Length: 391
Length: 130
Image 1 (cartoon, each protein chain N blue to C red):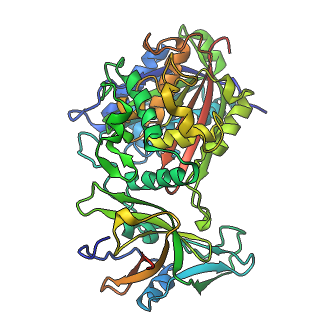
Image 2: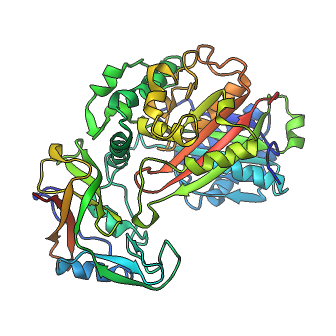
Image 3: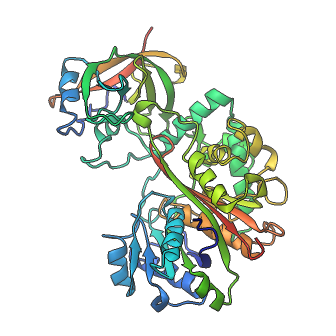
């Protein structure tokens, strides 16, 4: 059995704010939910399945069902960090195909910017029941030094350079100049990136994503409901997800879980990386993109540095237009979790609703990939293949 | 982790207590599986490789090489986070101390050193072998 085209993305919404000190966390969830339902032409009373992750308050779906006033018969609070919404889309398709719900709402929201969170450079809190905490917490692991270690090893094994990593940011910033909501809208050069302050070797400030408040939402519907809606319906052709971890100490930081989630998604969709017109690639750091592109099969392992050079990720210039909203590197990384924005821009591309300067012509097959957790330790990876009406 | 920084107290549970008791004796323990004859780290009661529950503590040589490293320049006191691959084949997260961070390289030989936290355990760090 395949779940190819068993459900459709009917609605999307990205919160326009990047700093939201006046709004509560559940309020942000509610605003993005309303936006995505309006976009789909549906209402809160149509929703019978709800999906959220650890960014939602309390017990997640249960607390949010009450706050939003939802009448549900299916909930899923799967937590895989920043990749959670990408995972949720796959789970929503499975639930819809199994007849467990017909209209699935996925929300993500958070306020790390207004709360002054030092997302990348402060150690993460680890609870006493987390098995690895005693063996990691004493050493000051943060998001940036963990990703820095992955980049350092990739450079060692494959000769990847800081200049090559910088090209990822250059491409994102080239796209972000057309997004009036993007936190960073200035186009930067390779020199700007490598001359920006070192955060954690070998990653510079401009290798790191933004810290933003806000959020996003996605509405998934059954084929029967999709037929009743006026919006362009986006087909969900394939989904794959996989955790990657330290494997009992036999570690390799040069690849991500995309190595497994990618082939699962491509197999279900029945296509190959060469068929992809546009890709949303999770970009917490430049190294995240570079490793993921290799793992998804857009180039051979170790060739990512050469692949991203010379504008190869820039829409209208390169072979693989990516993150045309400016991505997490420039536009938005709400709640320190960028997965939902990856889905949203991929859907915009298929609908022909990306900014005209970055819209990919005749865009019919796209990929959205999420990475959650840390490529320096353990992560949740998830890949979606989406298609337009003619796909 | 600089000498000036306070040595932290690790989270210890029923399963990991022997590891931390050994640190006071300057011994670095890892787990070995009696069924598949492989080591693993972080230590746990169940072998993550072959799924056996028959694991035992063994003392590692305390020597290894840097798998990768990153110095957090943005920290108030910059420090180096690293993975060290032990001679026994498993890699451990650690700090490289008593060194110039700019002189470190992947493949560099290092050995374990212990810093007592005064709370019943010591934290194992690694330092370059001259």
